[in-house]
Image (cartoon, rainbow, N blue to C red; front, top):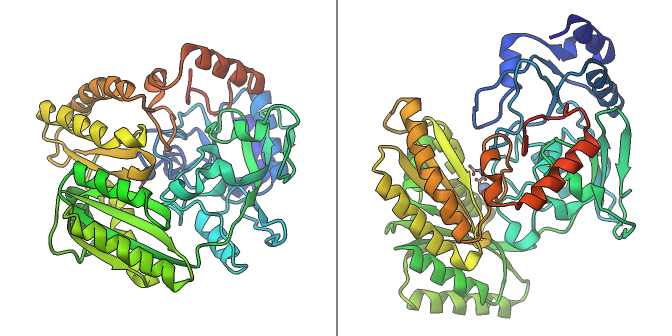
Length: 464
Ligand code: MLT
Ligand code: ZN
């Protein structure tokens, strides 16, 4: 990388915040998917003004720049090359006091999701986006990818919980979007445009986040189920139940066994079916609400669709069952090379889609294993392939590529999306055409050009 550029970077942020050692360039040049990447250099600014000065330098020297945070992404959206500067925002980690009247909090991009939750909890409020990666994922990344998580069915995606964004354009200009207003119908909504743009349009440095009170009491159900018919049956029953649903997650027995084997966690259910549903609901304060829920549960059990089940009321018991679901990604990562698909189909067709996708997998006759889990209630299953038999990476990838060629047309048949929540990055770029029309993609290109005429911001991500 140009030595004069590096020198100017050092003058801007301080020499110790410009990293050029190979291990740092590797660490900051890739995300959790471990898609090969290495940055030319890494810069760690502390303030918006420093971010602005860095982007200004990138424009002057024509250096491509890749913004990143906790690097927990799963689409290769921060994968760098030696030509690129990795701009990491983790040092921008200020959290302002909660505005309890407006129910908002102003935070910088590098604040972790968990730190935000802990900060707001003291005021009896929460930012309701809850992610398995919450200890590491950062707000800037959550917004750039429009993170979802396990409570989308109740609260929606990250974009619903933002009322202002501060961002820096590639020219170095700082823009303030929406100023924390609840209502603002003055033309195009650039704040929403930046959310989910994966760092290709501007660098998010701060945000005002909307908060809400957490449920007073919640209850989790873990059900062991025979098949997708039973899963869908339970989902229908939950949808017409007399309580508020917060999560409807599912995972296969294979996922559970992986979590038990790799993370030493333990599922208390004795009778295991092929699938599990993990359901989280809000429990109202009145005894009659609890009675209604008990009646609902007993009717469900009488229907004979559930192999085994447990109810978790205490927060300890709930953490224990949630750890089974939240440990899936980590247990797979620990086990070898993984290829991940985060899809979305209309929820009423989710079971049919999964059955057809599994049939495609069976036809493949591969030695790689399929792990199915995800956000059933959002119609958003995750299909993960693990190279458990140690196939050569070439054979593994070519087999999965073969599967992919059949999976995406199937997805199109179900009117699905190639990415429900992880985003496009580089990993799904070739498949965006299955989710977006040519007219949409030409608007994408025009928007990208308007924000970043020289193509320096996270180039090659989402679209070419
Ligand atoms: C999850 O649902 O656990 C996350 O999206 C991560 C993953 O898909 O591995
Ligand atoms: Zn997910």
